[in-house]
Length: 108
Image 1 (cartoon, one colour):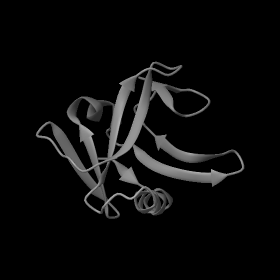
Image 2 (spheres, one colour):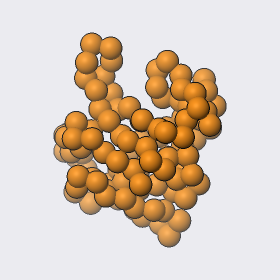
Image 3 (cartoon, one colour):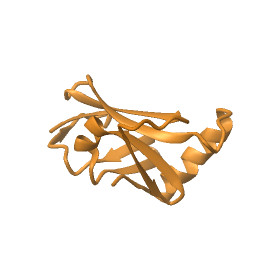
Image 4 (tube, one colour):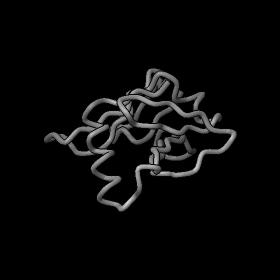
């Protein structure tokens, strides 16, 4: 399961409206190779769900994850911060053994 904090939910709904996406556009989270720690998160709006996707819903947010990425993301919480130390989405991933300083990449 992928969890979504209230702050992340609010910001996702704001962004979906600002970018002109319909309510049918859900959030797709994926893991791709790259970044300074070897793996990086990819977050985007998507209105397509394939047979190889899992869909989770938390706080009214549908999160789509492909099966390969799910292995890295189980138990992850998606958060949003807008504090003095930076602004953006953060992944709190219990599977990550190391993360980079920017929080956009990790390793297992």
